[in-house]
Length: 74
Image (cartoon, rainbow, N blue to C red):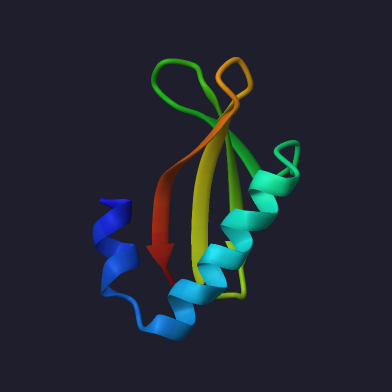
């Protein structure tokens, strides 16, 4: 679902999101504006970015991976 939302955005908005995603990669310990858990108990971070995107992610430090699990346009 995130891929469909992302690919439907105009180029400028995709570039903004790629910049945000890059900053998450540079600092995987970034805290979101809100914290949640999924149905398996995995901790999630939720960030409101540029007052227009709601980004949800979790970090799997064991495999050094950041997973974007939610992307909404507000």
